[in-house]
Image (tube, rainbow, N blue to C red; front, side, top):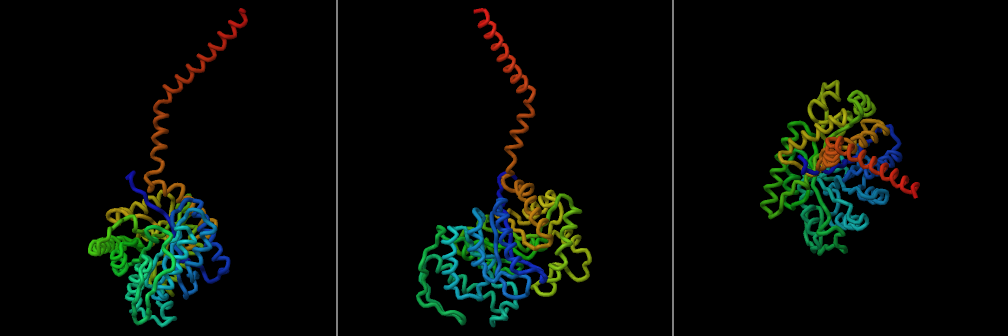
Length: 390
């Protein structure tokens, strides 16, 4: 398909092993965004977490503000802000400021909060997280549209709340809702006609769930007079590539086991079922991850495209630190050089066409060139002979 354009980016929780220097780990996350900016990745989404030890960015807005000063092109989103943890008026105000500070490069991703222990630490029950997300999102959308909001719930009380600044981005700051297996995010995103961030894996079962959630999004968008735009849909997956499959598999021995253990011990859902002894084999066989060559990654992304049942707007790699730093940078570079062009209107199609035309006509062109050179030699010799005769 030469007409498709799939944006690329990362979903940066981040994940850092417990034996690493946290200050240097945060700096490396910043350097990663700079690296991706140079490689023409389109988006970087930065998470919010407060417990568990691995995911150590507490304020994505603060991180994005700093990253915006070090990058030139990449768009930077909160991936995601947990709405039940914040007063919606204060959050909308901060994000509007960030919209101005980044000159429109910031995006506003929201969700209910992925880590239950984050919510528990501030007295928010897991059962209330999704309803509170919806209450806050409804208010935030109104506020960022310039409206005055008076609304009281059991957890916030707004009295004529209105932002001091309009959005820098026009017609408004881009927003998206995280959506895993539950339809809650798809319903909320569709109701407001904003983006959807599909997380929760890319196995065959997960892709079916994502496609079903897009159908739910479409239906809710229609019911509320919004347009279901597939370019606003992003799917998150895993990938690490190297020059050979053997090298890629060797690379991820650095950190994959610790990452999987964190998901088993702490995070909401494990990425490996009990009894799995070969994580790489399981993840690649199930389609959860690509651990291989750029060609393997092309096939992985093609599978996501087909599984979406109609296409989507961006593929985001879940930054994971499975490999050490040099191998991680190399993986992102190989993908930018050899994978992305296949999904961006076949960026090299015209180059290949030009090369093929030149090749197929080489005999004709070479003969014409040689004849032109010989003609000039003869002209020069004739002119020199005439001058001598004078």
